[in-house]
Length: 220
Image 1 (cartoon, rainbow, N blue to C red):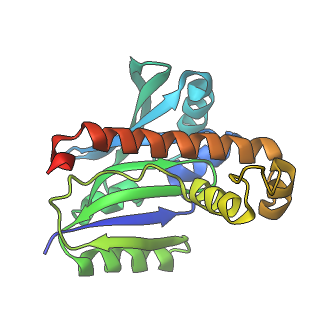
Image 2 (image 1 turned 180 degrees about the vertical axis):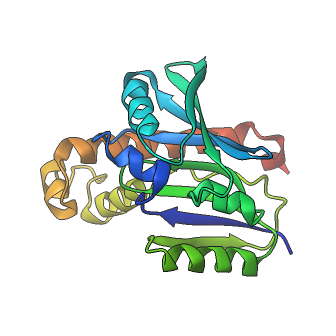
C-alpha cells in the first residue's frame, strides 16, 4: 500500500553536504523533484541573498552536473540542480527505488522531507541502506493513506526543537519567563539563531493555519 512519510536527514552527503559549506542558517526549500531518463533534477527555492553562495558551492561538488537559476519567485530564486542517475546521491537513490519527493525543507544543519513510497518496506529498506553508508537518517512519521494532499513539512527539525524549548521554558508567557539569551544557552546556539528559528517557525505555522482556513475541505 502506498504511504506518505516524513524523514529527517543530516546533510552529510552530496548536495545536502554542500549546503553546509555556505555557513549560514539559510532555509532552503525543495518544491519538487523531476526524474529524467539519465538524471534527477531537484529544484531549490533559495533567497536571492544566498543564491550565489549556494550555486557556487554546489558547482564545486562531484556528482552534480549542473546548477541553473531558472526563475525568480518574490525574493527567492528557483534553482535547478542536475544529478546523474546512478550517482548514489540521496535524490538519485530515491528515484531508483521509486520513492517520490513531494517537498522538502532544510538548513545547513538538517533537512526534513515528505516522500511517497510504494510501501512501508521499500522506505525502510531505503533508510537502512543509507544508514549502512554512514548517513544519519530517520523516519519520523508514516501515514498509510495518501489522500491527505501530501502536504510538505513546514518546519525544519531545528525550528520544531526551538519552538518546543521556548514553549516549555515559558518564553511565550506574559510576562516572559525566559529570554533569548537563556534559550540560546540551553540550545547551544547564538541568540540571533534562536530568534531566526522562532520567527521562521511561527511564520510557517501561521501560513499553514491560514491556508487551512482558505481550503474548502476544512469547512466540511
